[in-house]
Length: 230
Length: 137
Figure (cartoon, rainbow over the protein chains, first blue to last red):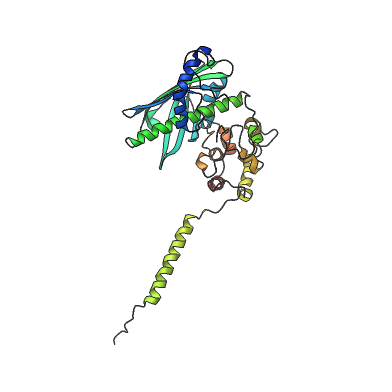
């Protein structure tokens, strides 16, 4: 897998004219890399988590070394959505409320320091166009007052995809003031990077870019960093 | 007639109180660890063999050909699928093995759910084994 720090938005990732800009950005990205402490976020182009009056916005731009159609397939494989988020302990695809949509129920169990949370989420997924997804959370069946997520999956060449993730959410569970916000934002950053790594890993396996039996060849036990799911 | 006055005997009372206290403490501690130790060979494998092996066996089992999970051995189980581990030792809530066996995932597929959903007792065995560290014992 390529671990190059890539340029900002615009043309393809290997555009020569933007190498200088990429180099300038490298310093800033290094800081992020240090913060994420080996989470291999080196293909991260942008990651920001901001909060305002109880609402949070996460915007991420990531280069994924896998074909766009495979990336899209993994993102829309709702039955195996737990593969992308290791905090999911329950998931269920429900009958659609309206044609062309998918309803997905998930339960997330995660601990932040000494506080563990169970977060219920009912989402409706709209697949608009070949490379765009919009996910709306139903507040009546979720621990969110509101939440909307948008995904853009932009193909670049045969094996590279630019993925833009933009989410806005207002949690409906207690978050301790000041320190709680800081910890939650840190956790969100960590989780989104992990999910992108898993997304890339699974998409590459499905595309045949990683041998399916690599775990067996790399040796037991299979709990290393190369693991997509565990 | 006057009743004989019994003297409080410290030499008898103190050891008695200590003994009763220790007995209570032991009972409490034993109660906290009352879950019996699960054995992979004795308790877990028979459940997997009966419920999962038909699909998760090479070369033609559907679960093996689609995700690569081979549960015929402890090593195969711990290797997991093409995508990674299905067991998080010590954490049955986040282990895919337990999530699937308890019907917490794949719930939309009635056929799959009916075929892999375990009995309450079987779920408990797998849960305890994973929570105890998923050892090869």
